[in-house]
Length: 116
Image (tube, rainbow, N blue to C red; front, side, top):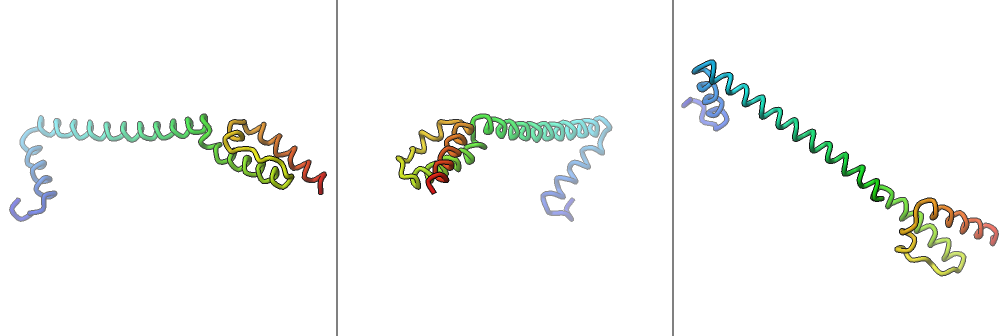
């Protein structure tokens, strides 16, 4: 043990000395090691599950769709400007669902085409 001064080696030598004393100590060490590995695996699985639930919840409340709604709202506002209409507020447009925004966008596009 005196030849290996690094803490990692000293710890490993201590573990080896402890488990070499008796079969019961070895069994205890292996059981504890298994427990620690199982807990680490459970924690990893729980983190992954939480990550997945967070992503699903984000989609349900519109986080994933927020970008799409924002783009639709921006296009509607641009068409309203081109047509000389009053431009809708972001807050007003983002309260609508995707289908309603698509209908407004298509209507504005059709009016702009007829005007050209």
